[in-house]
Image 1: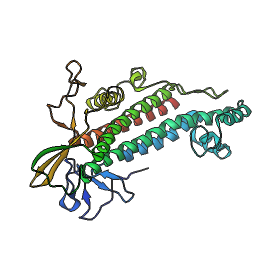
Image 2: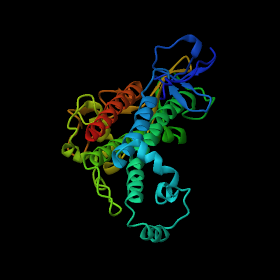
Image 3: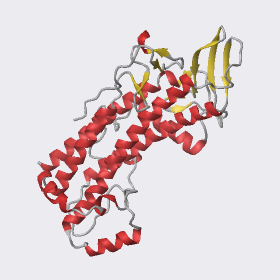
Image 4: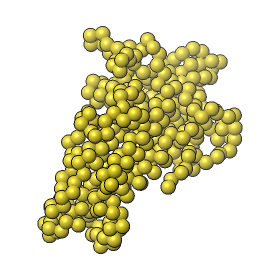
Length: 337
């Protein structure tokens, strides 16, 4: 079981990325709203964001799926040493050099072998779990990268003296900062789709392996979630909530309608020639929708500084993810009786 709860202790001079965009030192103390750099280079939150608990639930799901599809985990493990490697790699993994046609020819030779079809189907479903694992890592690392740029990268020409007050900047660094933020929301929405697909597959888990079965979830998306047996489970990603609504709203804006700002920018508050705060503004929202006046839908009167609440949003999202994955595991276990 994975029980790691965040980064290891570092020296007092280690920088802490703050939510307000101005780094501090680890030795100065922090209430848990910052990020520290791990030895491997990624920036992890001081307060556990649930990443490792998601990983643990996914590891268990891999075993639960094998037990459900093969009848028992022991039977699956007894067959595993004889399973050809192409079953777990071809069409799924870059380690396989087989082409589509070659893969098809190999399948023709084993089409009438139900146990091989079980393996094929298991690895297809497991690929959904793997997508959840890897995408969750992306979300966590993108969050740390957002705060790294916000705290440590100069928004404009380094060394230039600027007057006190609030100023905005646009530059390659600011473009990267905004694109990292946008991609973070897109990947969180990807997780919604991946988990919805996984839930659908568990609802309709195949049991006939006379041939290589198709995934029941092939065309299923988060927007179809009302069809799932899990329903609007409290504290899950399928329960209507403000955070998931915001993820959907921002993703749809970025994919279909444009950027969060017609000129992506970042702001700095300068006092005595030094930046004491840095932030990005989010458009005003009401009842889960952007405030709109005819064609205009990006108003900033609320001065919503997304950097002050982004880490909390990601943490709450991943906590709901843990609840959702655990419920899907319970569903598999109940199915086996």
